[in-house]
Image (cartoon, rainbow, N blue to C red):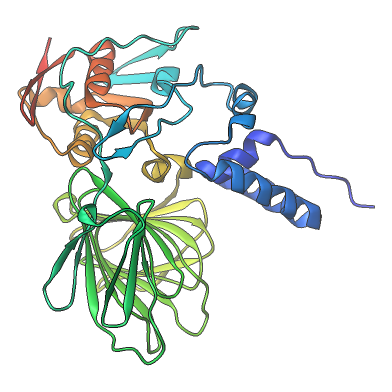
Length: 391
């Protein structure tokens, strides 16, 4: 008789909300395959914890699930014509902060009590939210923010349904295929369901060009920016994400692609399934779950290495997660999400490194105040421009 495999509750929740390390994913798949009842049980977990907020009946168990987070936060008031719900996590960034300047390294641990953040600056700079513009084939632009909640916009037999921050394409057989471009501005994010059922999460400052219906031998989309894909499986019609630096080919899987032209590199991170990457310089290269491919502009050979999945897709789960990340890179992410311009008065500050998690839906004043506490920096805010200075 096979030995019964047990799995911890936090692994199940982590699988739904953030993603697992390769070792954890292997253990999870082994547990899932052992008994049909495990699949049924996990589906219940997914329904509860896959929502924007866990149900109230489970909130009391949060400390057992993620013991390294200290406290909950309450619902935030309505922002920008919709209610933004905070995650059930306080400033988890304070869990572990690692600063690295030159050859030195410092560690800061969170206090036993939640840190009270007194807002000092940028009180009016709010986090991003559901924003998208649909550029139709005839050049017409549809700003979904101006559509009523749960409204339906129909054009040329294609129905675009908005509501709950989602756009759905419902292509019909033999329909005329045209291309739309979903444009996410700074300070925005949106979910899109393509005509084949594939789900796409789009990050700030992203463009995704898509056909209104998939016909032919492949399903090809074009990306600038960052997107997380949950692709509907179809072995006869592979799914391809094309960027200026190469393309990612999949058959049915979950993965994240990040390609901002100004960053001059592409990153493809595989959560589950199989994907391949190829470009003019690179023959098709397979990537395993838990690994990330990174190719810099002009490079002939990509780098493939294991990564912490929950860090790479944190943006999709309402968090910022950093691991030994330069302050320069962190500020770039804040620029996109909060729709601000950030200027370093001292270029040496760009080299500071930080590890930890932050709530993506906190106002920027709390984020900046936190960095003032852990770094030798201060911020000056004038309208939508933020200056980073040495104390």
